[in-house]
Amino acid sequence: MLDVEGMDASGGKLIDVVLDETSIARSTPEVENDRAVAIYDLIEENSFQPVGHPASNYVLRLSVIEKKLVFEIAGEEGEVIVTHVLSLTPLRKIVKDYDFICESYYEAIRHSSPSQIEAIDMGRRGVHNEGSEILMERLQGKVDVDMTTARRLFTLVYALHWKG
Image (tube, rainbow, N blue to C red; front, side, top):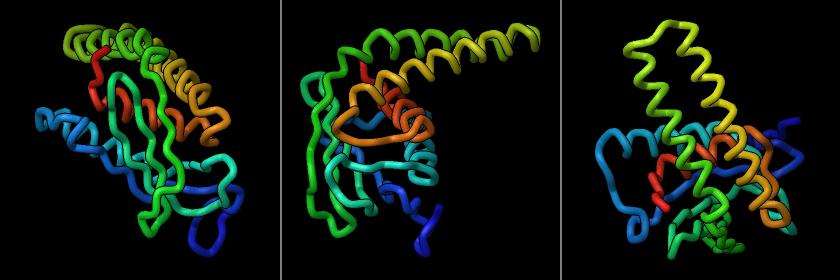
């Protein structure tokens, strides 16, 4: 159900995602493009509701400090509402697996048959879903997100090219 502003009436919504440039280094033009696309997709469609706070529009500022992902959540006017710090350790293996399977997928696109590409892509989607589920578990009790939002958040975490 949507209200007059287009916000899901059952919960909040991200209206912006900002990457902290002091803790997340700029990268190659390709990686910067991946980050921009991930942010665009996340803002375009999401369900993001900090637990214990009213349904509203939110701004998410992401930073990475000492192998921890910091979610600073603010209201539309910029007032910080809550900050959550998540260890990236539980995501270490899945990010590494996802990186490997993405490399295999892009290599397959250049040299493999459509059925081989499809098989690798199915595996890639499965690993992506697994990473999204881990992220949802890490956010449980802190921020309510649906699977679509968790998938888009995982894509962004991967696009940050965090290396554990």
